[in-house]
Length: 130
Ligand SMILES: [Zn+2]
Ligand SMILES: [Zn+2]
Image (tube, rainbow, N blue to C red; front, top):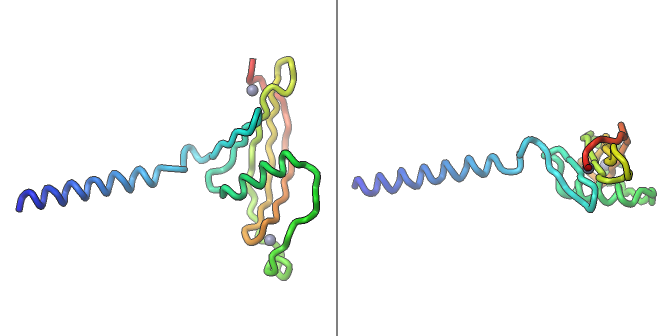
């Protein structure tokens, strides 16, 4: 009987450890970092992977093709906008210090369709790479 209780206790403690570590994952100081070539994108941890991919795609393809599709609900009631800020640091843009460029964007993102609109808030050069 004691062995069964010990086994249950072991299982319970194992479960507790597992659930605690699962809860800590993905929160990592509240940001998600994606690196593409010399550019490092810093997103809020609560953005979706889809949102991050789209932002990065738009960042490198800056011409507006105007093919934004509206969901039917958005056509009737307007977009359901959530705004998040994204930081993009591009390393070694210039040949002399400060060499790296930091841009901060406000991104309006519709939670119902794939509408997004990025607004550049600040762009500055920072002392970073030697
Ligand atoms: Zn929408
Ligand atoms: Zn740098």
